[in-house]
Length: 333
Image (cartoon, rainbow, N blue to C red):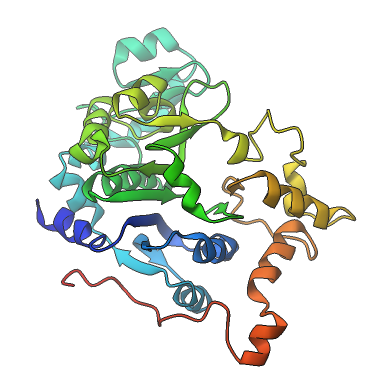
């Protein structure tokens, strides 16, 4: 195994489960709820690593990560892509600056998009850029980098991995993931899966490169292409219903509250939080990174519940999340 891939693989040594996320840029304060809930729900024998690339983390967030025992690992993403035969996804040509022009021309022309072979065409998401020899890799964004990282880490680490977007909160222990095989979850009637939560067990074909092979072939990490129903079958990924995983998208859970209420305060905020925590195994708030939760909103009530010590803990002089000082992952351990 090559250098960067080998170093990352060592991170999971001695752990039954490697839970991980990825961030580039400023780590948002609203992700506090994510880290606090994972700290209380991660199964025994699990380790949580936040992989970063050019990330900016405030001192208050660093303190929180330390208390939640989240390890931080900076990765050399271009090197990792190269080692796994995916360097072309970041490759630039003299024509790469014209991607937006090409997108504007092809987004509403499915036949032309298919003939051009510059990208894929999806009936809902329309034109999706893919790697090609003329324009190089698709335009680089933080979302696209995250798409690549979840594929690579899930493949390189050979033990059970659980990828999580940072806009997830977990009301109950994550042991429920062991009741399923390797999985992503559905967008309800869209014909492709959501990889915002992706569990990949040690016996999955993904650990032998199946998902990397699909990424090479498709030339894009966008979920409506990479995680189509056919590609999920190829990689041995079950597609779970979002019924208990995503309040915003669940259409079959009759008791789900309006998801806009998660960040807003009203007379029913406590009941809304109770329903969310009782009816869902995971709560996904879909990239609302700049949201300011109102005082007394379900989000605020949950956050205060997790950060306010109980009377017993206060009397004992203990912080309920007290843990080791922040550790940056050592590649040599």
